[in-house]
Length: 432
Image (cartoon, rainbow, N blue to C red; front, side, top):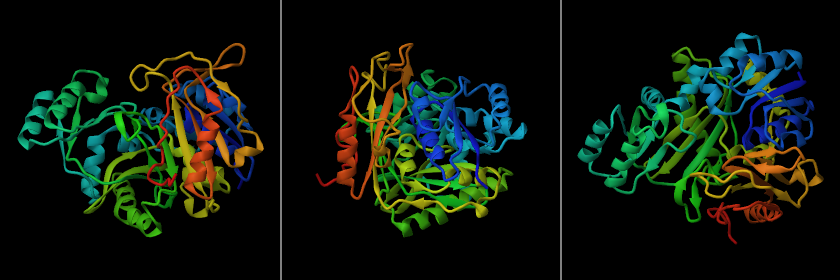
């Protein structure tokens, strides 16, 4: 059955990409974004609602007024805060886990213990509640570790230390209050080595539908140098995992985790994002997230063909077995992010964005997209920067060289003061 009206909750590039893809579902649903951003209203088939993601009562009222049949929650914050639970309690169908399932991302300790119980391969770890305890363990081990704030820290609470001194400094930074309550507990992990890949699975709590693997680029600088960001670009499908490799991820990682969630009485309905490292000893899980990655979502959405809204609805209703099939276009998808000056530390905001290219509603949208993220619209309808990652240019082609050439060409049509981007996104799959 076609889904007529969908609400996407969130304001970033991920939510804009979800709204764009849902509006292009076979049933042509009407899509709302709450709150969306300064460029969201330009997406064909979409409206915006000035309602904050934390305003559950306001969202319920808007769903009633607009006869919304499906709510898709984009960001991890409202998921961890229990927004899906509040909307379900009001009788709405929701694509996104409740607060119990969102602990997969909201607490790294909880996720590691769940993996341990489920027998999912992951790095050895130590949980500490004070800087003194953490530093003592680091000195005893006498090697660099991965230091993770236990809670949500907007993608900035992880340090992959290169020596013992950096490990200790990262532990002390977590407990200094920089990440607020998220850093009141810290997970230390052994360092693994190997290429990283992201796998996303849609689920109704019982069954899984895997999407093509993607690879993200976290560091701000070319050559994967500099501090971690929310993501400076991505590409899909990542050739690191073929069909057999994806099945291995299903059997070793996703099915055991879903079974462990059910064993805890958790009906997980939404997307599970497994961040993996392909080590010499096999697949290891680095982290789980309870939502689509950003910018992986922008990379993946243009590859999906079919009734995406109906598939999300089937997940929300616990009936994935009855969902229509999704077709994956046999194309390569490339995504490059443009960030504000001084990102990721203190991004420069309020700069005018000039775009000489075609919009999302042009015929070129079939093979090239521009998804806006940290932007606001002023009184004259001009777009200005309002966040660290401002927008992402995405393009699809028969090969990665052509896809990245098109994405960079689209990005060359955009400008704002201090705009920074990486020129080497997708270096793993590009030949020129």
